[in-house]
Length: 466
Figure: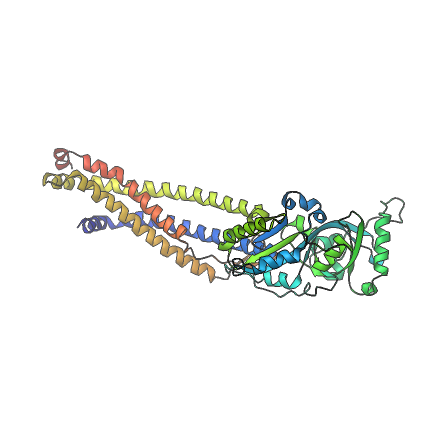
């Protein structure tokens, strides 16, 4: 009976009720659309990070804080045995999609072909090409750009790798590699110019020695990589540049080199025992990260390995910062929408109380209790909020469908070329139910003040109200 009465009272002034419900609906639609955009951004960033670096990484203890400056000093001993233990663990096996070793390295890259004399520092990563390619196909959220096969690092025995666009630009390789939108470096004095800076003679000598021992060095595009071995001795290898792999951050792109794991180990460890600096684990599902990390930690403690585990959020603090920023923006927008809905419902319910003052006095004279009057108006506010929030959900889903089929393209963070602009359906309970229930709760609370005013009105004053 109360619900029927509330619905009849709402329909008395349909224009006012429709306006209020529309305001609530626009608030709900705005929050859901922004929430869908947030999920899309988070999914895209997470997909790119997991494709490149996996969900979990096992390092030697201390590497996360101090290792990037000297990766050779933090190699994992007998890493193949450690990898077998991880892969064969009955708890981890069903969770793991890819388990692969990597070797980080730093050094100097030089281009000395054809009389060139250009060099720069670099940050390299040695990978297993087949594992890297499989990791690039991970797309749990459906937010990845179209997959393009890349077999440039699939041969583990080849001395062939890829470099960042910035490295190619600085080393003067854009023309040879046919890299678009990549200018040649400005002319500068060479080593023979007395007014120009001299080249490091040790680097030049090692480069010539390495190139003279490489019969294939006369074919293709080659650069020399100089680094210090784990024992501190200088070492150099020749790398055939198979192409450019553009990175999304300029500072990384200007220093990035990816090469086969065996070549990276030869550069860092020479004739010594080949080690790795990381064991990367890519899981089937991101939700398994806490369980997999807990199991890895327990396994490391049981085996007494001097290792530590880090997840992709710790390895990529930018991702955490972006998610927190968007969460803060969403909270700010939710507060604004809540205030708008609050004042809209208060205004509507106040007008309803004023128009029905005589009616309130009549039913109070007939014996209706004050609590019943209060409950009736609160219920009307809740129904207005529920109708408006439901309308907003419908508007949001219709808008998402239209946007996803409109063919818009853009270049989001973590990408180097435009991709279709898509919104994720906001079906997560925290977003969908939170938005709907939150706006209904605001509308209900907003009707309390007018409802209390109606319930406290004196019968005599209400009956003679005009």
